[in-house]
Length: 411
Image 1 (spheres, rainbow, N blue to C red):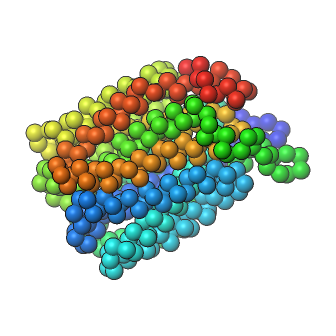
Image 2 (cartoon, one colour):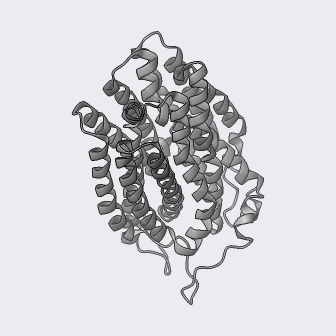
Image 3 (cartoon, one colour):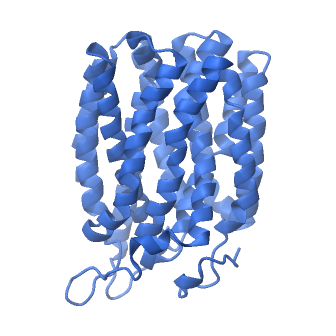
């Protein structure tokens, strides 16, 4: 990566340091989330939750995220991504502590802890994506998918760590308390290297955004990108929440093997995100994400209707690879115009995270009536919608004309 700078912008060394810090923020967020997700089956058993009840419990983390996202754009525009991610890392640590002890107490503390975790994660997510877009512009390379590969790498580490904790019979409480200590020790220190989100005015102030945050909610292109991200977020989030349980209940696998299936999905997603930039340069945003959506549907059908666990694992691989670039490409598209990146990313993330709000209870209720495995077929419907509206991801012809972004005309 070759960083560029001007007289008023960050130096090449600062951009490289910000790049490394952004990777840490993404990896940390993924690690924290997957560490929790890897222990969902044990929490379910400990609290004796059926699929419908578990779906409602998982709704809390999505509700927290959706509550934070509309606020995150204006907050980041005022405080900057560095301070926002620092504050949210601290808040998420507190939430992890509550979630860690909740299985020893009852469902209500778990719901509260997951809501706070979701709130912290939502604002953290927008902050690190804004910084990723800033770094991407300074590097003049489409590296956003690699930052998201960092998130996926964090989820792989978290999932594998969770599988090891299950195999070693380490309690949920001890496991998640250790994760909380790691997050608060590493992430706030690392993100000090973030660079400024926007260039400051000569008096040192952050320039106000024209039109305000509300204007971004009226832009057709931004709303379509949000709907596209929602579809891929549903495909990704459903896997995060339900793959382990679907393998355990649907294929009769042990809890450790169910968690390893989840890790396999995340590994495929991570690898595909890492190789994403050259593929995007060669094929363009729209053709590539449409092809990947088709791949995800094939993987999903193999996972649901496969005759044995081996075919289901192969389906999890394709499902993970197919859903890999939807979210990061959507974030890059939302941030095409640096002047409005923070608020547009928050709008797109707010819409996208509705998938995490609706997904757990929808799959839970369908799973209660059918089975969790069969309920997962609803993911294919949203991926078909994403394929139809993927044209909104095309880059505007000129970055100098942000107000024309509602009519995508570029690649």
